[in-house]
Every structure is written in structure tokens, then in C-alpha cells.
Amino acid sequence: MIQDTLSYEADGLSMKGQLFVGEGEGRRAAVLVFPEAFGLSEHAIGRAKRLAEAGYVALACDLHGEGRLVDDLQEAIGLLQPLFAAPDRTRDRAGAALRALLARPEVDPSRVAAIGFCFGGTMALELARAGADVKAVVGFHSGLGTAAPKADAKRIKGRVLVCIGADDPMIDAAQRSAFEAEMRDADVDWQMHLYGRTVHSFTNQGAAKRGMPDAIRYSPEADARSWASMTELFGETLG
Image 1 (cartoon, helix red, strand yellow):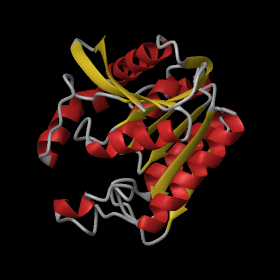
Image 2 (image 1 turned 180 degrees about the vertical axis):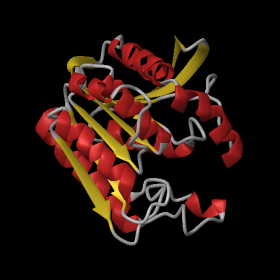
Image 3 (image 1 turned 30 degrees about the vertical axis):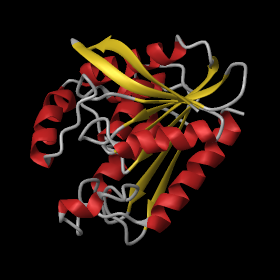
Image 4 (image 1 turned 30 degrees about the horizontal axis):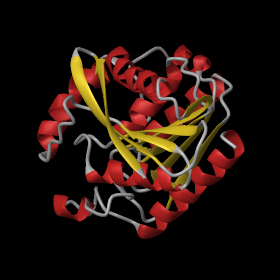
């Protein structure tokens, strides 16, 4: 497997993502992997490696610039607050990652998807709302809301899947209902999978170190089920 640092500029920052290309020749489908709020972590990198092993070109994307990883939860939330308030900035960071990925000779530009975890899921959704030509978007324990006009959802070109813990206190039933209405009103091809007895960060085996089991907890069952759902969607959309 080839690993390469992919540098690009976005939102006034110097971004450094990690690109993974598995064995093989010719152009292939590609996937953007947007990380959790903490930034470019081993969690996102590990998911990108799994995708490369499955035959995709995968880019584990930078979030805070210079490949920065912020371990403190409150510091990470503070860094994200301006992005929640200004979706165009989030879209700029996501769109720049997409352009950098598309510039790679290994990538088939007609077969690209985006996935994300926590705020990374928000980034993937905002990329789609911006009208990017991606075939599928998948959010794992993803933020669902946006401060942008709801009409932006009409610009979504690909299929949307969000995988949410049914007991996630950060993504409650009201937010899920609002997202459902947004997708329906825009006539998006969308799915929402809910996992019982599951809270936030259910894909991250390091979630326990936060010491917040009622809010942030790994679930091997939900992790496996959501990844399988993503794989099925990719089989339908990316070939």
C-alpha cells in the first residue's frame, strides 16, 4: 500500500491529509474520510487504510490545518464553533480536500464518495449541500444540522446515509426529525440508520478514554453494522 501526505490550501490554512492507495493499476473509485472533531487522528487514518485495502483510493482529511490533532474535547469544540456558524468555511475545507483528491492520477473522478465521523460527518454533508459531484455521502454519529439555507439540500447530487446512535444525546430526536424533513423536502435519496443502546462515537475504540460513557462510547455491533451499510451503498453507487 502507498501512503502519501497530500498538501492543499483551504480556509486560509495549510492542510495536510494522508492518502492511501492499495495495490493495483488504473483509475479507481475514491473516498474522502473526514475525521472527528479532534482532527486527523489514527481513527480516521485507520478507516482510510481499510478503504484502500478494499480497493479504493482514500484520503484521510485534515480538519484544523497542518495535520493538527487536538486531544482536549473543549478545545476541539472551541475550534469548531466558528465553522458551525459559517457553513461556507466548512464547505471550503471539504471542497479543497475533494479537489486535491481528484487531482491524483489514481482517481476516477466519476466515482467519488465522502464519509465522516462526528463533525467529519457534518463536513461530508456540507460538501454534498454545496453541490459537489459525489456519488454517496455517509455520516457516522454525524452532526445533522446546518446554519445554511435548507434549500441548499436541493443541490445534493448523490445518495445520503447517516448512521446514528438512537440514544446519542448530541443528536437527539428533534435534530433527526429536522434532518428528515430537510432531506424529504429536497427530494434527496437518503437513509437514516438508528442503533439501539448506542450513543456518540460508536465507531471509535478510543472513546472510553473520554470518561463519558453515557454520551461517548464504542459499540462493536453498531460499528460493524454501520460499516456494512456503507459498504453496501458503495457497491450500489461506486461499482
